[in-house]
Amino acid sequence: MATTDMHQTGAGGALGSLGSAPSPPDAKPTGAQPGTGSGPPRRGRAKARMLQLFGPAFVAAVAYVDPGNVAANLTAGSRYGYTLVWVLVMANAMAVLVQYLSAKLGIATGQSLPQMLAARLPKWGRYAFFGQAEIIAIATDLAEVIGGAVALHLLFGLPLALGGVITGGVSLALLAVQSKRGQRPFELIITAMLVIITIGFVSGLVISPVSPAELIEGLVPRFQGTDSVLLAASMLGATVMPHAVYLHSSLTRDRHGPVTDPAKKRHLIRVTRWDVLCALVVAGSVNIAMLVLAAANLRGVAGTDSIEGAHAAIAQHMGPAVGVVFAVGLLFSGLASTSVGSYAGAEIIHGFLRVRLPVMVVRLVTLIPAIAVLLAGASPSWILVLSQVVLSFGIPFAIIPLVYLTGKRSVMGDSVNSHLTAGAAWLTTVLIVALNLGLVYLTLAGH
Image 1 (cartoon, rainbow, N blue to C red):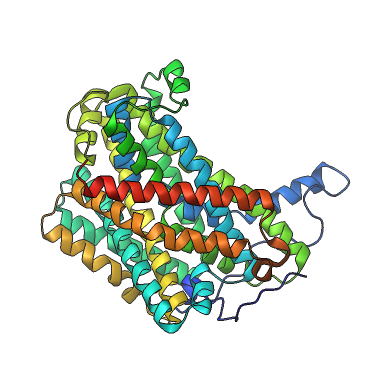
Image 2 (cartoon, rainbow, N blue to C red):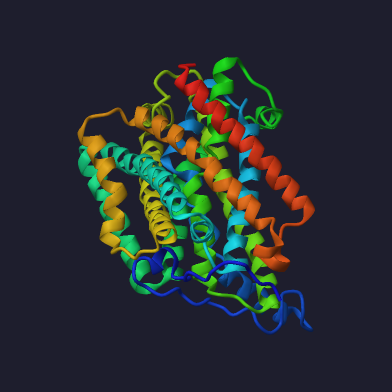
């Protein structure tokens, strides 16, 4: 039976930090496991039970289709056509592995990554780690609130500051639903928003001619000059968001609760593999669709290096209806991602500081800086770039401890990473950290 060497500091999690108890699993994976039984009906029931356990990864996947990704993908497609499709494919493959490790950590240990780090750090280290993680949460919210504000401006002409307030208010309402109704309704709402995001960003391909030959050619790694290298570093380096790494472990912990039965734990980890794979395939497909949309319709069009400019170009070249659908996708991208970001911020506070704050306080901690920046009149595109640079600094602090802890048998028990998984995880870590450091250097150097 797998054990851990940590102090059980509580499994209240992100929403436990908001004053609610962790939700029990919606379906108990006891009894017949998938693949057992005597006939199709039994296998069908097993598959249905497995699908009922899906959800945490779809919440985490929202981080991969936030407004920052929208800006980077549209810029890549409009400037370089299909050339950088391979970057998104590689980035998504790395994201699948990292998010799986985070999810597995929550199931195997019954604790989130922030909780586990807090239990192993001295007091000063715990506060220092919290400080950088909270800065990351603020930078994340900056990009996501701005994305929602820009979408509301495009759709209804609202001032950016007012749009930011509305975006924050909607995220607060979503968190209130999770706090009162439990995690499963929250997962379903976020998943529904992910569907809307997918429709908003993919629908343009229905009326857009895509070159299959160029798309396949885009899978071959190559560049087109120094600027394309910088953009590729931005796309790859900012793929794995620190807040999503912290969050996923708390999502699986809160969803499944403490798991002590080894067979049940193995079953949940198997289900989690499929949950992560399906969710990240959706998110990766959306990102690729955005790049392909820009490559097919906006190549060489001026002004597409900003979300507003890309929206104007889409409306002009593909019709106002497509522009509206795109703006709706952007709006739900901002609303969903800022809600998920606030959830992550709650877990960061709870995990590192071991305190429970009201949901209003948690929401305002990251929302106020975003509104202040909008009121100051800063360029949304500049803020998005700056937020990605800040996120780059936080990546090593999240991913290195994750890979280290999931590779320790004293922590994970029988769920410890295999040699193959550990090797792939450390290789992915080196690539992600190097790319993020390269992105920071190139950005600060003005390239």
